[in-house]
Length: 368
Image (cartoon, rainbow, N blue to C red; front, side):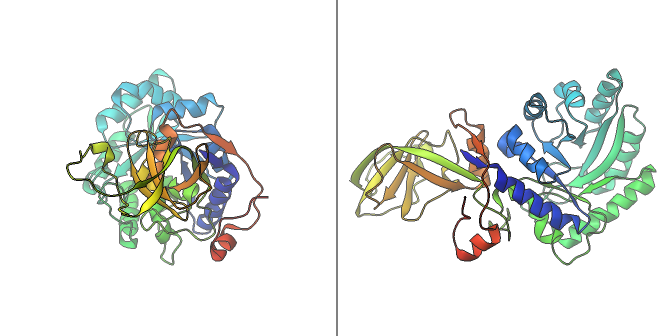
């Protein structure tokens, strides 16, 4: 995996500046890259005010690398890990009173105070406290020594696919004011959601109380998670997956009667009955989400198994030992970054064309 850190820094700086004008700060989410320290630092260099992670193992990786900025755990902490959470993270997103009580006890043992964000259910049907119960939970948090209520947040466009519309953001803002009235605490942060919030956040509507977004996909891949469209001025090719050709042959590509339908081989988008050159690449489902690889021009995805990718091509220059390079989706990125056999190659380049110029000309930005 080739990772262009300068493009990630550029994407982050661009969105940080645009959102700052709207009164919104950026918390960079590093879970898709397993807390890779160099990538996290590129986001910090781009102006992200802090980092967010879903897995404690990734937080520990960041800390071992010397990352000292605030890190928030955005998945509800496991009861079995509360001591480590308090040690490694300044704050965490929570939905369960029993977990918050355990975090408070762990904080008292360490003579510290752990920040608590309450996650609100706003329609995505994943994690979250019901809106009518948030005020009561906030009062309970305020009564616990060892923790401090820092804010509330919501999530959109993940499990339930609910898009973050202006009405939802206004409702979350109203809820923040109600929580303050009920708990007597001023909320520092009202986190409106993730990269799917950007069309709303950069639009014409008032942002109300929303002053934070947790961004990962947009910073790394420069796309709107809902539509997949490029965000103007951002790079989409900061990550490039490179795979080697291990076999090439001319074979007919057709369905055969009586074939076995193995679950790992069900991805077969191409059905070309003509003779075509088939390339076998040394990568498969165990390494990435094959459906999330963007095929280079002139290449066709035929299928994938656990450790093979089959590509159809009419390019005679691709032989055994050749490399093919793929831009990828967020799902493919997450799996590849976690795969033990994928070598991560972070590097910095001096950017030539701006991302918007390259988009307008229909080609990738030049590297010089």
